[in-house]
Image 1 (tube, rainbow, N blue to C red):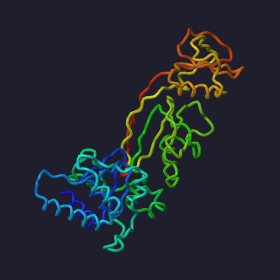
Image 2 (image 1 turned 45 degrees about the vertical axis):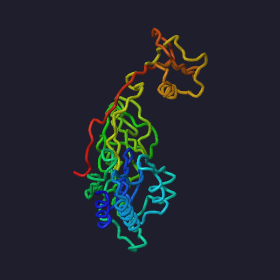
Image 3 (image 1 turned 90 degrees about the vertical axis):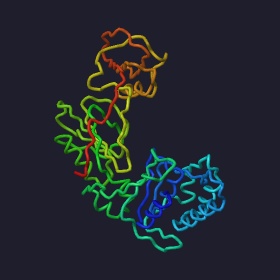
Image 4 (image 1 turned 90 degrees about the horizontal axis):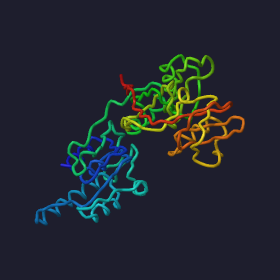
Length: 348
């Protein structure tokens, strides 16, 4: 069955793709290798065929069929050697170094020795063997409706269908109360989060995420931060963030992290005496922001006090009784879980 599906993919000149966190093992590997264009981001595994039948002639014919088909697919001879020397009760999973060495990724327009140049594939067969590790049946889906995002049209017109599938954003994961901190490309003034998101989309694929600061007290200056990546996740109750996802990316799971909300969990002129994690202040933290981030990064830290006149940051392993401390800033850490409030399709 796996060879039949693989041969059909080869005849149709489809592209094949193994997404991250996915596994394509055993007969599924035939399906992947059949792709006119192919890319491995997940796990590709091969081994010998297995059979309980004592029919040696039948087994030899099966091996002959596999070799003939793999040759038509332009499979590197080294890959076939690995396949036929790996016992059927074992699995050789190719490392990323081997993927590059054996040229398992293949660009559009590649021609096999037997058939000459292959036209660019018309669509994508997504090989996801999470639930089909030992069979190719039901393991190939044809992706023909990749999101049409006008801002990237000039750039993506030059991309193959597989590159388009793995790079073009087709949906956006939206978060409330989460700041995607750092890795800014640009910062602008926007009227709302929708305008901020559109400003990210028009950047020809350079912008991968954004954070909009919804604090009504900010009357001037930038409140929309456009980012080259999702950056560092940080809790902030006035933040509204979005992360653009391609067809190759799965929906992001919820994440749990320690937060010290800069809007609601920082206290001016408050000292938290005692409970210091060290006898010396945190050397690298020279501002209240540095001190806050240092506490977030330190698993044992539950709070901090920053002394402005001395520029000293004290990380706390326990929280003492709050007292007045002129020129001090203290913050309390808590665990929060953030899941996308909504995932919006860009196809609609």
